[in-house]
Amino acid sequence: MKVRVNPEVELALKENRPVIALESTIISHGMPYPQNVETALNVEKIIRDHGGVPATVGIIDGVGVVGLTKDEIEEFGKRGMAIPKVSRRDIPVICAKGGWGASTVATTMIFAALAGVEFFVTGGIGGVHRGAEKTMDVSADLEELGRTNVTVICAGAKAILDLPKTLEVLETKGVPVLGYQTAELPAFYTRTSGLKVDYELKDAAEAASIVKAKRDLGLDGGVLITNPIPEEYSMDPAIINGVIDEAIKEMDAKGITGKQCTPFLLAKVAEITEGRSLASNIRLVYNNAAVGTEIAKEYAKLK
Ligand code: PSU
Ligand code: MN
Image (cartoon, rainbow, N blue to C red; front, side):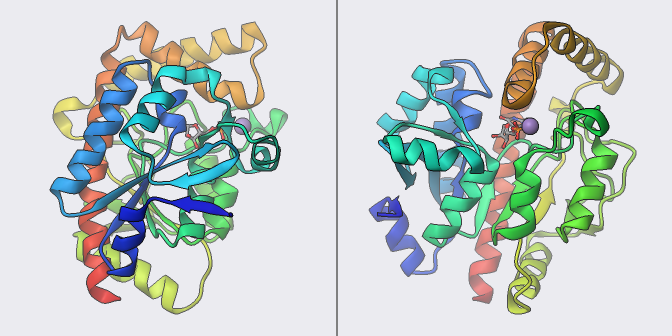
């Protein structure tokens, strides 16, 4: 069995109703318990309230699951970092061993595509890390966006990354980077970054028409829709950028590298801001869930 699809999700796909994939690394590695579970369940509820069907993705006993149950989500949240973070290169080992795995953006795209789910909502994507000219640390998420046919709705990328280089790689890989009612690339905690997106979307219908055009032409790969955090939850850029600089210094001093970088930085930023960043993080995911479902609904009308 390649992938286990939740029966509700399967039925929705058959009936051309909007299905929205969600990742589990954000649950197990991106937020502390119990806020992670609470957030994951609220996101599912928001998607339902907007007329969509949520499909949280994870690997259970060596099988990719598209549409975790409430109890399974609870398990991913409780066990947290004890469940390995699984990106594309980790899938074969986990699946062969029959283990559990928390899906990154890349892995969630892979299993969503196998199940026929075309839209995926998250908080932030991985990208080119600062100092990548030395470390070559470029997230597998970018590679996946270049090849797998899933549209990802996020709040941009965190300033823990090198955002100009991240945009360059996305351009190279042919990924349209669209701003939802903004001409500027949002930087996760903040609405602005000083960088331009490829195109400013006016509404969900326009977003859907662009995804449709890409699919009709058989241009493989993802579409990235960046949706800024609502003003009332956004953080002061000077403060958050100072915090991020401090977190990166500590990461370097501790010699943390590879797949540990992103989880370390997320936890450190939350710690330094005493939870303020976590509150923003949760709100922006809710906002993405609402916008992502509206886009998936518009897309369903075009199919
Ligand atoms: N960025 C966030 N929150 C997250 C992640 C990224 O703001 O939880 C997670 C996602 O699962 C993403 C992964 O796919 O980290 C990227 O990790 P890496 O940089 O190791 O590829
Ligand atoms: Mn990396």
